[in-house]
Image (cartoon, rainbow, N blue to C red; front, side, top):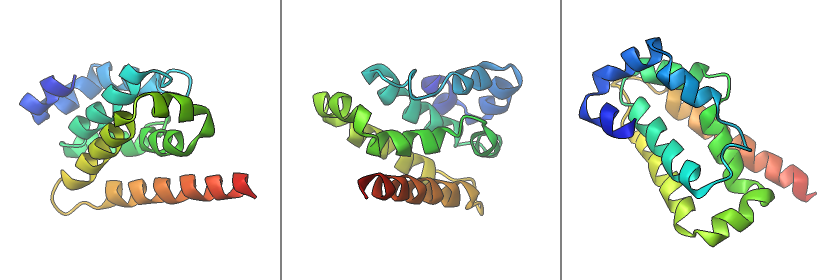
Length: 131
């Protein structure tokens, strides 16, 4: 999916309309993300989707809130063994989230603001659990 979109970001609206991307994103939850493959692949797909303005709207309106899911996973103690077994995963995930933020359609900051909100909410939840 990422390779297809990166070759031509104008394919994003077609992939949304044909239900390819909604099907992938709908399957995302903490259970389906408990693999090295998913933790490596999903951030890359989100970064590719965000290359198109339709992709930004899609990510922001996805019921599964994929960016929030990723930030929650990074601070979720139940993911610690998986993240520690593959130390490069946290870097891969954060690199692709960074790509989501850097490759914004011109003038739009909604996805950036959403990503910052997700990080803040995840950190607040972590602090609340620590108390």
